[in-house]
Length: 109
Image (cartoon, rainbow, N blue to C red):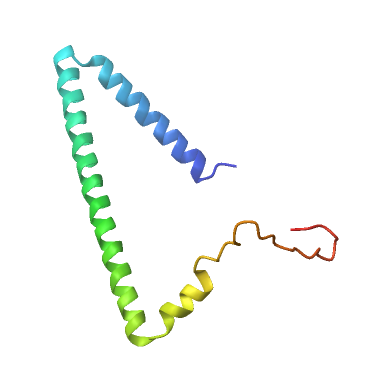
């Protein structure tokens, strides 16, 4: 049974064959020109990607700041509540031991 994956593979193979044939029939000068063109395009894509990543970082840091301010404004006790849930737990003092009760299986966790 032929499905979309098989058709796509056939088309990609045919295009790769055409591209290889075209490249093989090019003069060295045309090959050089094509490679320089591809390098320029790749560098342009890279620059755009770096710019987009920087913009995303700025956007998410701004969103986090605004989100935090909004939560504090509408829920004044939210910061204390979040610190109680996710805040750092106190470590035992030096020399102090922690007693752990066995669970139902008898193994200590």
